[in-house]
Image 1: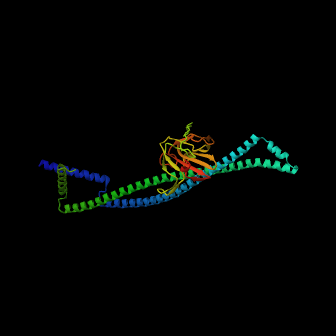
Image 2 (image 1 turned 120 degrees about the horizontal axis):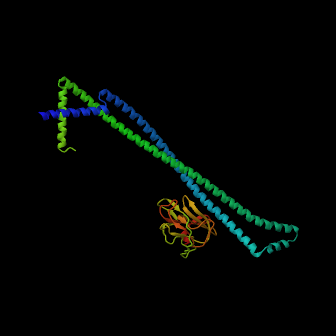
Image 3 (image 1 turned 45 degrees about the vertical axis):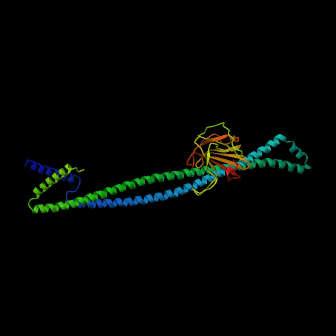
Length: 388
């Protein structure tokens, strides 16, 4: 009897504790549950509207990113064209400079006697003045042409700098858009969590409302039977004992070098003897593009060499070519060496055939360590393997 009484008391206490928890965190009446349901529906509707606004904002950002990416791609193409134009401008400037040096050297070696003889052999004063003017015009022509080419080169350099600055602005814009996208995506994820939580609360409140209605109907029935309290206590005790029984049943950079290596029998030496051909000159089917050079895959840090003697026009950084070197060999030949990890020459330096110019790397637009070797004749790319 005592055991049964203790079971009933403990069941009532358990029921009281559960009801106390419900009072603290949930509605205790049907009216309160209905008010909470209306409030949760309003909050969910507002959250859905915010979610739709965030989705529209995200779509707008993605559209702006697509536009920015297209502008970046176009700007990269403009920069590559400007780099090619700069190379050609330096080639023209260097060619004119070399030609002028040859004429000056000739005048120095033979002396000015031939020019004096030309002037003294003039038939009359008019002829004499014409010959003097011709000599002056020849010197002025060389100077003017060199000045013209220097001006063109300066203009191309300024254009390339301006394009690089525009590229940085566009890149910063894209980075800002990426950050904004991440922020909006996080807000959208948080909003989804909020909506999911509201839906959970709505479900819990609906279950509670249903339970409260059931309890009210049960209470009415118990009152009509005039044994509501005893029946509730007995039911609680029975539920507690059933729960206990269930548990009991098992509920549950720059590096100079003096190396010179000449290999092969072609017009040009192999610029990377330790490398192997990974992509040839010409059309490539895997990316539907035309490859302007010869890719020689090699380990990072492997030396690269000048294909022939010449003048280093460029030794520096390019967003696309990475650390690169451009050498003018004269007679219209220019070679380019791209994607170095470090360089061994500087711009304006004269290099001999087989002299080291850099170290293999994977800088710029590169998917692995290799040397992109490009040969141009008259400003147009040609197959490098013809000359190796």
